[in-house]
Amino acid sequence: MDTTSSYFVVKKKAIPEVLLKVLEAKRLLETGRASSVHEATEQAGISRSSFYKYKDDIFQFHDGAQGTTITLTLQMDDEPGVLSEVLKVIADFNANILTIHQSIPINGVASLSISVQVLPATGDVSQMLETLEAHRGVHYVKVLAKE
Figure (cartoon, rainbow, N blue to C red):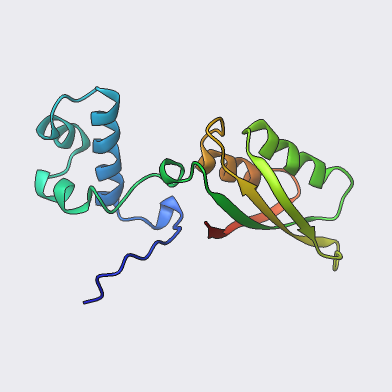
């Protein structure tokens, strides 16, 4: 068995329910809404053994993101103002844009690569990605790298 650590970025809908419940139990403990692992796992609806098995292997994406650089790729409509609005979303989350590269649009769709520095004041990175993905004119957003 390979003992090296590998990290993956996975959308919430692809994560098994037990892992999401482990995250919920960890959040209950961190926020003080549960005073013990027993109480947190009971509230989350999982066994303590499941919690202990996975607790060190799953975390919210934004938890480990501070101080890192995230490189995103987006496809978006080639329309006036779409790029400006995308950059505004990143600015609204207080992330620092390091690089931007936009390809020449083909069939009205442009590919964009953005490197973003996550700062202590940066909001929830997962929420930022969801906001970008739901934005008018944006077809998809993917995380290419997290350094």
